[in-house]
Image (cartoon, rainbow, N blue to C red; front, top):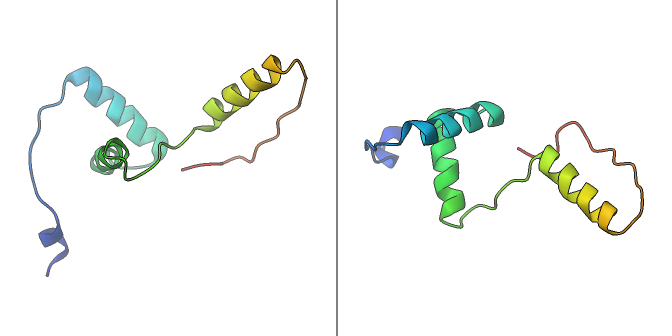
Length: 82
């Protein structure tokens, strides 16, 4: 069986603004647009967890620390997620 036999080829129409967001997300994650769409499908189907970005993690941690009225320094590795 050839590799391409494992795939179903189709065409879909995507609104331009959503396509732009998918394209930006693909660039940010280092994936092709096709791979990004597959990733989003898998997340939407519940087969993959939603990855958290470093900036979102910093925001969540910061909000939690502010709520607890303590001051902390956060040092995260350069790359914490894909």
